[in-house]
Image 1 (tube, rainbow, N blue to C red):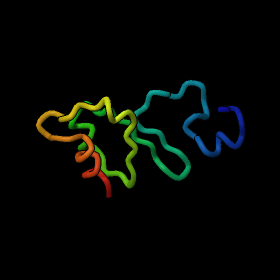
Image 2 (image 1 turned 180 degrees about the vertical axis):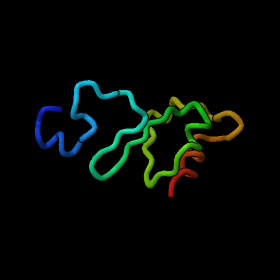
Image 3 (image 1 turned 60 degrees about the vertical axis):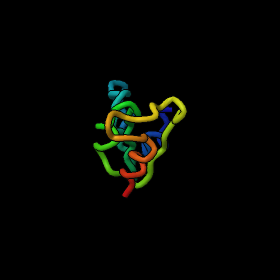
Image 4 (image 1 turned 30 degrees about the horizontal axis):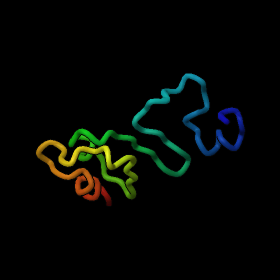
Length: 79
């Protein structure tokens, strides 16, 4: 898919074979994807976003450090 013209337009970060595929920040043509783990309160406090998707929430700790519920922390990061 990296070698298809349309994919290079939508996903410019994947233009070369040497890109860091494990980056916590992926820039697309009209948006940015930030990936963070759900175990550290610093991950929840590091950025403000317009939308958040939490995957496998059932595996999150019920409380993240002294900061509290990870779902509440994620909601606080929304613009």
